[in-house]
Image (cartoon, rainbow, N blue to C red):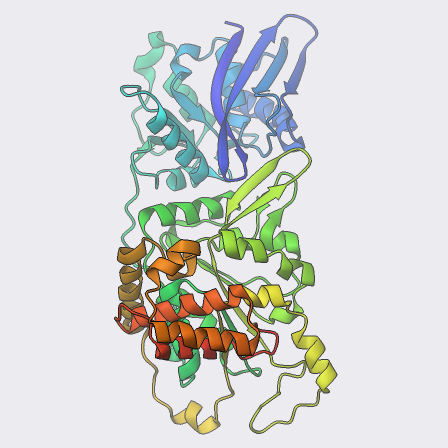
Length: 519
């Protein structure tokens, strides 16, 4: 047979689209042509595939005119993931393996010149897409099996009920698809070829403990409220007050991820090549440097890649030295904070990535950092302080639910103070508050909007009157008013109360008055 078809997948954002690798061998001037909107990395597969087949002791049809088409032609293809399916297509078209036996299988993997298989990005996204496609197919259809290199196969096997096979070398794959007449020569499963079952990782994620933080009762309370309601948080305080230490322990206060959340988070990390099995089920904490660009934060490039906000999906995005970030980068966070996803549009394509993260920001109150410090004088002028705080726009501050001051600790409190409350105790209260919200409205309080907010907040008449008077006096926007109401709903949940009282709103109001620009 001079024509063969092999199935694979191309990554478009977080979506893994089906790709048919068509290989045709014809007589004529020897050549090796790759078509189908392929990137430079895919074009280089010609040399890798040629060397891998030859060094594996197989016959490369160098006297034929080889045409490889990656269909559909308008779908961009990148990376070396198509090396393995191209090699198998050539071997099937030249009759060295049985082309009919390739049906019902999908392949991805980069080949070394010696034929070893190397990991590829996005294996978990491929397995998820394949599993969803099988679930949507008609009943009774056999599931599609996926062959991947070591490292990638273990990721893909995390998807429940996925049929994933790990192969270490091109010859390990070829041995499974030899013609029927030599099927008896196929070696049993072993190091080179093995089916992987869904990996059940029961190890509890490890987080830094909040007990390490001494003092800072107000900041600890704000962290608890933020974790219970899914709210964003801004901490303002002098250098060395403990802002970074608090932020690094925030993920340990959040409820454990369910299996779907863990898969979504791991799929984004796999797409960026950052996933490791040791961090399965652990809420990510991304802390980009303040020199990060808008593309680094929200994603971009060609083809589009996820940014830090997507890598923090179902986790924490910690932005230290918040005013030092480029203005364009901070303003790009406004829509994802509201919607929970980011859509990257380019001339040739659009890609959408999830971005349901909790923002934790930290900043100094002034350029020198010592405004309001009990023992050190601030050396900045009022204009310098105003310009520094003005780097954060009003619309961005509007979208941050909680603003809390983190003061400098006296040395005696730091050296003689006992350990704080551990994360486990705080997390227990957070989980109970989240469960109340889920049972009442089916979502976290931060996501309440419109009629759902009016219906589920359950505020007393005096509470609404107090909030209205406060918002009018402080000149709050409608967004700021609603966010204070959501925070008050979370405070009531932590207290185990069904109705939101004046005391809950009064506490919520205090978390929006640290900066003058904060609505």
